[in-house]
Every structure is written in C-alpha cells, then in structure tokens.
Image (tube, rainbow, N blue to C red; front, side, top):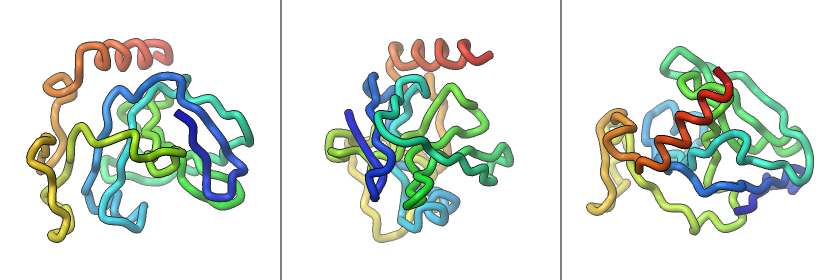
Length: 155
C-alpha cells in the first residue's frame, strides 16, 4: 500500500499488511485530529519505507502520560504516523486517511467508545470497547507474533 501527505512532499509505502486497525474515539484523538475519531493501521515501523521526502517528528503529550512521537510532513504538517509510549519506536500507528486508497483498510476494533460522538453509529459486526482491550484477546496469532518480534528488535 502506498500513501502520501496532502502536498505530496512525503510519499511512502508499507511493505506488510497492517497487524490490526484501531478506530479510536477518545477525546484526545478527537482533539488531535479535529475529527470524531482516528483510524490507525498498526504496522512495524520498519515496514514503512519513504519513497520521497523526510518526515519531521513532533513530540506531543498523550493521555497515558507516556507521550507520542508524530511523523509529519515538514511542509503541509499532515500527521502520517505516530509512535506511542507503549510500543515505542518499533510500532507505527499509520493514519489510514493518508493512504492512496484508504478504503482498502477497515477497522478491526472501535476503542474508547465511552467518549465517541453521539451521532457516530458503530457497526454491529466490529468489536467495540468503552476503553482499551487486551491485544491477545482480539489480534490474530500471526499479528501478535509480528508485534512481539518488532518490539524485540528494539529492546
């Protein structure tokens, strides 16, 4: 899958399919995106290959207190992916909206639905949680293995 920022200065491809896709409805994500939720495809950081440009990394606080590092285009400032404290630099939360074909990726789970906007209707066929969930309860075994291997590389 390929993607880019709004101005096209940053172009990338992901060389692995997402391990899992979160649709997060927390108020923190709402504030950061200026939207009702964020849709993040979780991939190994080394599965993102830049084909054009260099991202600008911005450290921001997060509700967990561990912060996050956001990769942005230095020109248009679009957020492309983040690294959260829990996964560190090994795991990237790629903004699905930056993919050339964002319809190719759909949520595997809706999280923090306790703070979702009341007009957002959730599908019955996708698990949803008022907060976070345990990855091992939902993720396929192959994705859990990839997650473990990626984190081990940076440990």
